Image 1 (cartoon, rainbow, N blue to C red):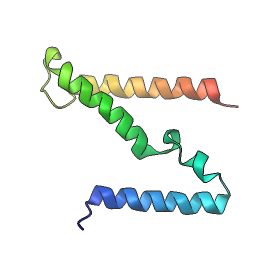
Image 2 (cartoon, helix red, strand yellow; image 1 turned 90 degrees about the vertical axis):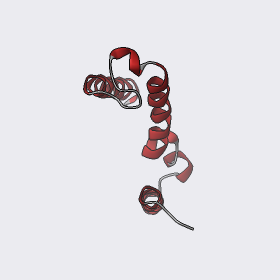
Image 3 (cartoon, one colour; image 1 turned 120 degrees about the vertical axis):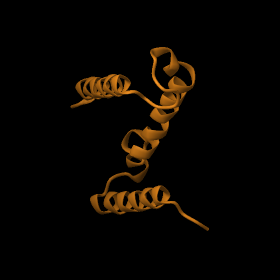
Image 4 (spheres, rainbow, N blue to C red; image 1 turned 135 degrees about the vertical axis):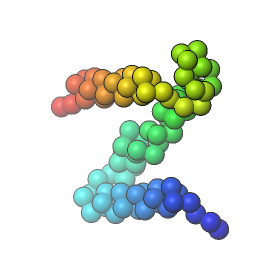
Length: 92
């Protein structure tokens, strides 16, 4: 069975995370929730990016299938602001 570099990184990251959670005594089920898993968040956001690229990107004069420089700036700003809003709302 072949394993890509990305798959190997994901496996290593998951195992490292599992060991750290065990050492710190964190509830493994809670710690493995999507909001704490970069790969799961990537999958969620990746689906949205793909939907955008498939349906809207060409209308802005950008190359289909990739985010242009302006779109990258807008995307990063939106992620930063969403993260800030979540932290403000849910921090203790």
